[in-house]
Image (cartoon, rainbow, N blue to C red; front, top):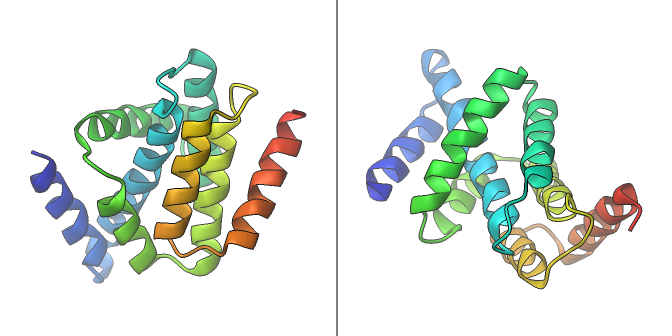
Length: 154
């Protein structure tokens, strides 16, 4: 099932004609949201507070309604349940996003990690791993981490 989903995402992302552009964007949103869910679950405590923060971030970042953000978050949660690693998602994002867009993804991940007011060592480790897979510079990653922490007041 995961392999089928990965192929579907990969095909949608690689499509370049105007008609499939929506599929490509949807696939990239799903990849990003799945990574966000993975961060929220990394400490084995996916709290209501984290889920609400996840919805807010998804809605704001992708310009989605609350209903569409909830649908995407639920779909990403299902995908994350079956995911073996973050590599298949980061590969698509790395290939199809600009450096600035990849940095935005890392920023979102830090915001999810700090959503419950603290940073768990597993969340920290996973964000760093994902940022390496996205080839975001360590200096930029640390700045984004600092910004996310400052935003939470911790």
